[in-house]
Image (cartoon, rainbow, N blue to C red; front, side, top):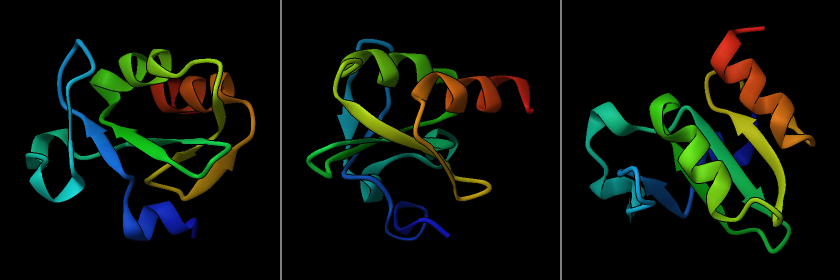
Length: 88
């Protein structure tokens, strides 16, 4: 399993304008379904509904993404988004 699925991301998007909180302060209904990781190791999680907002925040800087439910890493962020949103 990916380390971010265990430890969680650095921040979690909780609002449509990119508002974020520390994982421990995030309401349960906004827990991450996907975690985006930059090449410097910093990470940002988002629930399914806010995944696109999170993706767009540092769009050119994401190194890979992780689907939390499976722990699978996707080097192509768009592929992770497709899997999260479409289930395949």
